[in-house]
Length: 414
Image (cartoon, rainbow, N blue to C red):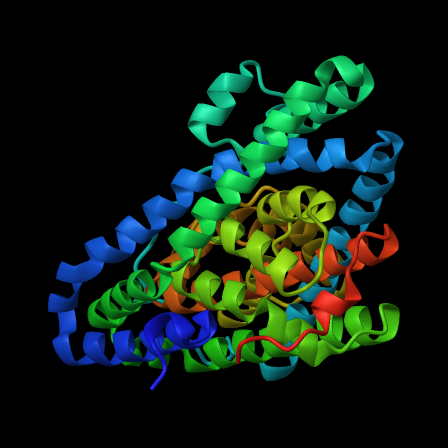
């Protein structure tokens, strides 16, 4: 009989999800009483996110040895993230148009949901430069932290030998923080169990029946995006790597993403599997993944597009090709401003829905309807977001010569 720690982490997490769902279904609302265990797990993860991002980015930049390499890496990363996001929204729009989940749906009884204002893209870009870098670290502002860490890393490289002690300190700090991350991941099965039990206890399995066609549409779109974009196109066609090996290596991070519904909370796990399972060198993992957790929202873009088409069908709004192009472009940009926290896309749908002429009342009613089924779908699309982060990281690592194929193809503890 295998001991607990001899069982592969993904098996422990998946088992915890199944048991948690059963316990939640049987216990009902009472399952919320153990939700604090899941909250504690998420707090542990958020505790380590900012230190992990900061020290690993600085250490990764220093390890490049050449500041100009950072520019090449950044351009490739941003271009590929935008490409995968655009692919996701196109798949979401296409399936929603074909399956027509909104046809025949009556939203007259749906509760209106008050929406927060979206952050203008100019304000979002301006906030990347922190007025107080220490404050940015304290507040957990990931984009500002990335910017400051990149500047510090380049500064250490430029100074050279006199800054060697600082570089060594950051390298050692990176090792320490990664070790703490591995310890936190051993708590993951218990946290996942509590999170799933609480969600199932509060909403039950029947929550998806309220909008089963929309749920199926989003599910199929997510699966197609994984298979076509990340499996066939990026892994098989572009990188000549095995899609099976990639998904196998990414499964731990995707399972944690599914249970936490937060790209930011999953970041430590993503960085761990990137290096240990996918053969991505720290120099790429420490820069590409934190950026992806903030701006790469494949699942969110896909979801927002599908829901917008759903709402248009429900309210009888005829969509033209221009509308589809506007939705694709707007959603791609809006996804950049999506916070890496649960259900953040609900507060950004108004920007996309507004492009097709929906009134504020129609938007509020749509979001109120979606809200009741958003949590399970949010879990699903977060897993897609994380898969996209790891796929892009694998591609960039290949192009930059920072990829270890032997690690990618190694037999994992299955």
